[in-house]
Amino acid sequence: MATRWGIVSAGLISNDFVGALKALPEGEHRVVAVAARSLESAKKFASKYGVEKAYGSYDELARDPNVEVVYIGTIQTQHLPVASLMIQAGKHVLCEKPLCMNVKEVKQLIQLAKEKKVFLMEAVWSRFFPVYQELTRRIQSGEIGDVVQVICSFGKSIEDVTRMVRRETGGGATLDLGLYTVQFTTLVMGGDKPQKVLACGHLNDNVNYPMWAPESLESSSGKYESLLPKTGHIFNFENSQGLMYEAVEVRRCLNEGLLESPVMTHKESLTNAEVMEKMRTQVGVKFDQDD
Ligand SMILES: NC(=O)c1ccc[n+]([C@@H]2O[C@H](COP(=O)([O-])OP(=O)(O)OC[C@H]3O[C@@H](n4cnc5c(N)ncnc54)[C@H](OP(=O)(O)O)[C@@H]3O)[C@@H](O)[C@H]2O)c1
Image 1 (cartoon, rainbow, N blue to C red):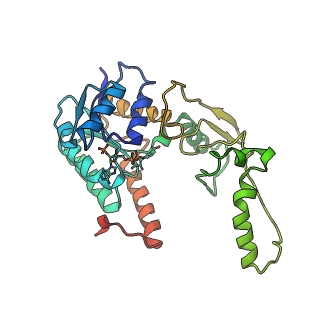
Image 2 (tube, rainbow, N blue to C red):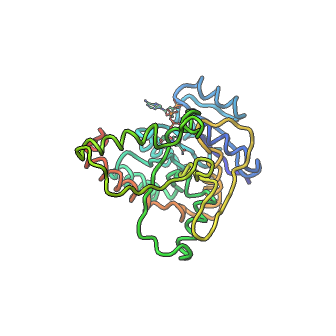
Image 3 (cartoon, rainbow, N blue to C red):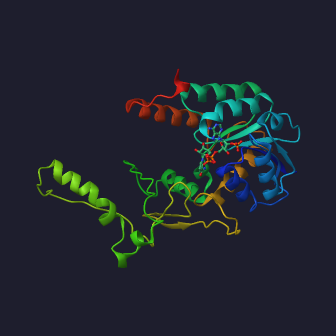
């Protein structure tokens, strides 16, 4: 039997999620309803993707007995109230990242899911890419040695500007953008030359980008590649086709009666929230939800 999805919000990522499902077998994933704050927007979404029902409020979707699991694609300020509404109604939930605005909210939501005995997962889609799984395997097997340091850069920057990625036009990260950091450093150091410059990077025809939705992996033990299917769907975000992997995981968990995914656990969602809260608190960011 197919997993029966309800989609909350008709925004950018919801479009991508439903688009990504198209690459999965119809007999396994069915989008049975979509809800948006306006009925018009929900109807437009429904007709674009052939969704059976369109609702002009999230509450109506929560009350639809045909919806088994809800994908929440609203902006994050709405994650706690909307996910709580769905969980209270007995729905399983896959909620976009970040799960909530702060630690307090994450704890509250996890507690509610446990009480209601429903599946809840933060949609950290990267985790379900075959490349991330291969990465995990290589680390756990010890085949790349002991990992003693992780330096990670999101790395989104210049690729939309053709001139900046082409060698023939003086492109690359160094001249256009790196210059600002070099000149700042030189200014602060009183114009002195650095004693040593260490640089590393990838040439742009070989970059394993994007790190959060990758199709390849390289380590001392070799190269691994897992390409996304090409369905022709036009997505809003890079490699959004890979959202299908988390949908597969949700279906697997539901079929096996799991209330959380062992790959993206409640404990890890809480850890993520704690780390992010520490980071933003240190730089002075406070949300209304913190009070
Ligand atoms: N996994 C990924 O790759 C990925 C990529 C992008 C974003 N995200 C996450 O997905 C979530 C949505 O991002 P998005 O880019 O899809 O955002 P978006 O299109 O700007 O907004 C998503 C939906 O949120 C609701 N919304 C927007 N503004 C609101 C407001 N002021 N008050 C209440 N509701 C509002 C709307 O729902 P209605 O349609 O019901 O009106 C809107 O369609 C975020 O949490 C983001 O972190 C994930």
